[in-house]
Length: 115
Image 1 (cartoon, one colour):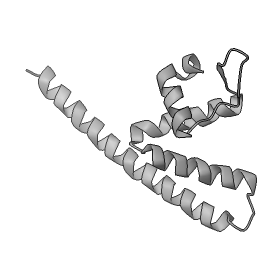
Image 2 (tube, rainbow, N blue to C red):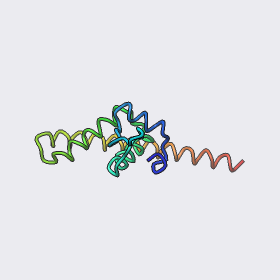
Image 3 (cartoon, rainbow, N blue to C red):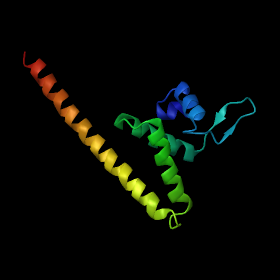
């Protein structure tokens, strides 16, 4: 899983210890075992990191997504959809800030190259 995601074993252990990503099982030798669903979950987590989401925020989003998957039309669905919308808005705002920073970095590089 570490190779497939580009994350370190240490990061995977940390995610396990914090409860962010639990392995689906363990081998007889004690190695963590992950499913394709675990891989998808980890890829989602990995994509949140550059946007500056905290571990707590990541955990909240995963709980929202799990709740929507478990009961897409259940009694909690409207609340969960509102929470998902808030995460989307936050991700869009954070992305906008990164785009602005990238633009500034490009301007800076252009200034340096002209010298």
